[in-house]
Amino acid sequence: MAETTAAPPNSPTTVKLKYVKLVYQYLVNHILTLVSIPVILSLLRVGPAEILSLYNSLHLNPVQILCSAFLAVLISTVYFMSKPRSIYLVDYSCYKPPVTCRVPFSTFMEHSRLILNQNPKSVDFQMRILERSGLGEETCLPPAIHYIPPTPTMEAARGEAELVIFSSIDSLMQKTGIKPKDIDILIVNCSLFSPTPSLSAMVVNKYKLRSNIKSYNLSGMGCSAGLISIDLARDLLQVHPNSNALVVSTEIITPNYYQGSERAMLLPNCLFRMGGAAVLLSNKRRDAARAKYRLVHVVRTHKGSDDKAYTCVYEQEDPQGKVGINLSKDLMVIAGEALKSNITTIGPLVLPASEQLLFLLTLIGRKIFNPKWKPYIPDFKLAFEHFCIHAGGRAVIDELQRNLQLSAEHVEASRMTLHRFGNTSSSSLWYELGYIEAKGRMKKGDRVWQIAFGSGFKCNSAVWKCNRTIKTPADGPWTDCIHRYPVHIPEIVKL
Image: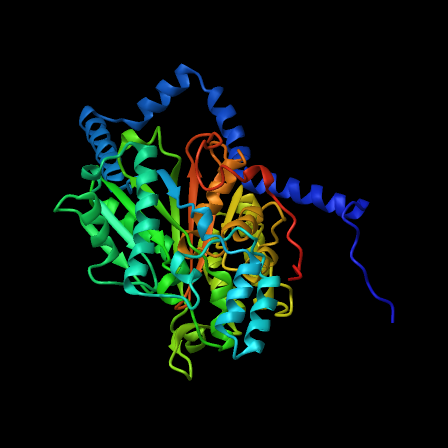
């Protein structure tokens, strides 16, 4: 039986279809402009005599004119007073671990063999995962994990938290010039380490923040908690005028390094690494000029009502009583479903009219004519210039690249962040944004889409618009290595 093959990318048929689509997009996206041109031209032909004649025909008296003017002023006032405040991202800072914390593949595997010397199959499993993980040789783990066996004490965990969080905040304060007394709102998110006093209280104590500060500590919300913190900060900044919000996103590895032999629970050991970020948000108008970005949308999707979604990332004990995170085999399928729900909500907010119309027509066609019609996937490349996909693992990035039909360049920041820093949980999005800036690609007016997944199961996304063309930063986590990137990442790195 003969096989049908798709037309080559540069064939005449493909080129013609490309131009047809470009014409269609231009016509639909500029329909209002095209329709208004004849109207404007006809109005320009109207002379003073016609305008005076039209005014006299309305028979308006001074009271009616005054009432109309008052109503217009009232409507304008109500509109501007009810309009949401603009939320600006002034700047952010990512933690760069010291060289002494690096974990090359050889070190990781040697430690695994020594720790799991009674279970060589688990060692081989970790090696296979690491070979295909997309991680590089420079990712870092906290000092307590470098011991054999690891020493996940409370003191060591607090030490890691202080190192990561305080370093990120110090760097942010140096960048922005903000003082501790100027911070009105503090939000710290860390999923798996939730001590008492909280991490937010630790920050208040370190920097001697004001006694009336509004502080929040989010835990157990997974890798998407960074965008949940941004959403919470946005809501708080809407009701507290003239305020600054400090958001800190991190994951503390020390107390959560699994020392058992269950394969599903060994996966996080291979992927998660040290990292953290501090972000300064503001609703002050005077910060608009110096801010890097303006927050446009935050869309949150929660699939926790489904049992499989709820348990696909689950903290539990193994048969030997050792605690770890169990990653389900259904994780990628569930992530795909969560993504579909999220883009269904965010699509109408960001996509041009041409894409929305095609999506609607395809949806109607599937409902009325043929359910087997292939669903139309909107081209989100028309809505965004940059994509920051949570660097949760190579499979996560591959799945989103395929579902959203993105090019290799669109997912470059995510792949290189995974290679250089590993999965830093909720802070990975900021390392990716830092990569784009370090490459000098961020221009004024560019739109950025951040997408993150988290336990529960959640898919959250945020849309930012660049306020100004951003020069290549003189400091940051990418400063000493950006010249080496992008690098080729083979499918399998033989260890």
